[in-house]
Image 1 (cartoon, rainbow, N blue to C red):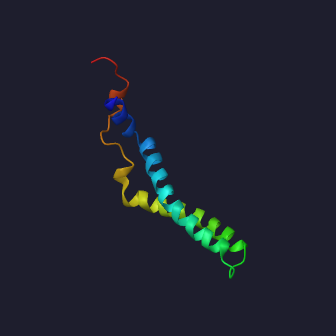
Image 2 (cartoon, one colour):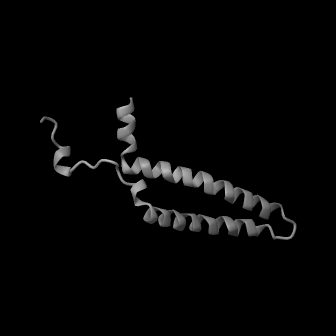
Image 3 (tube, rainbow, N blue to C red):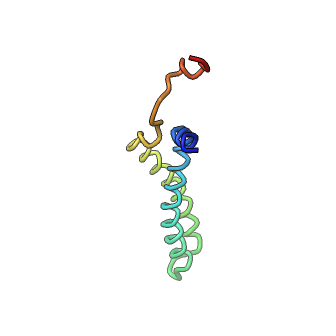
Length: 91
């Protein structure tokens, strides 16, 4: 079980999805708090929270791309297998 889990976690797509999910969870809590504050405030119009949500969608994608460039090792595999060795099933 441990070998299959390590093999799964070494795949860059799976690692990327896990990191993106964690990023969205943390970022999303902050967005919910700010959106709630904007929506329940009597001094801001109702459409302010909609504009904020639209801007936050674009900003989160930009921020995630920036994080991917800053820490590319998080999205790469721990052990790379050369392409010519993948197709061999026998030694």
